Length: 229
Image 1 (cartoon, rainbow, N blue to C red):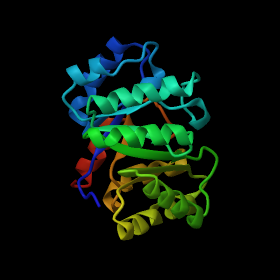
Image 2 (cartoon, rainbow, N blue to C red; image 1 turned 120 degrees about the vertical axis):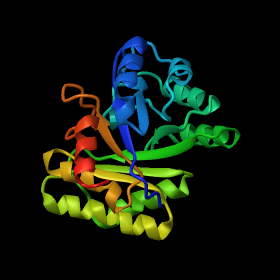
Image 3 (cartoon, rainbow, N blue to C red; image 1 turned 30 degrees about the vertical axis):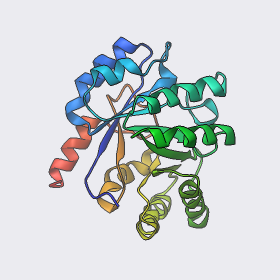
Image 4 (spheres, one colour; image 1 turned 90 degrees about the vertical axis):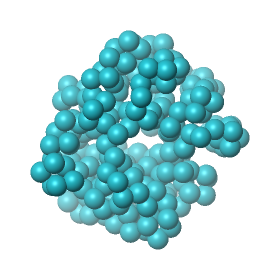
């Protein structure tokens, strides 16, 4: 399991120039920059890889998983495969993406240094621990290098349940990103890496949240400094 704290800052802008400028402005507070391709009016991978020095994670989130992309699946996957071909640090593919998308991704990865994050989001609740563990096991079975399980916390018990996943992930030797969305889940975003999570996600600013309950990268750094991290 990864023990080094990693802050991933999500960049959701509509133009490449804006996204590059914002990414550059927050790079000092980020260990990884997530480029949300689904926000871009014109999707491109190369400008980011050619310009930004931080490790990049490319995500092209489908609308059915809470993202902005509403087009053809082949087109959506094509952008991620381009990132793999250009050896981006990470790509994110949904666990519930079509089987053909998973097959094409797994065919492309052996020729690349890119690491695959398989993700699953629940925007309503936090399911039982049994279901969460099952999702994680499926991610591992489907070839993920890293799993990502994000749920919504309606109370503190949901947070405690999602944090239990790290014990299971440790036993499986499976790197895991996991925390809760929503106001009740904010503490899990801060605590997850201290409990064994691979990295946590932050926003550029309070006005640019890409998920409910995100806090800014600058605030996260201040919190970690106070924690002595």
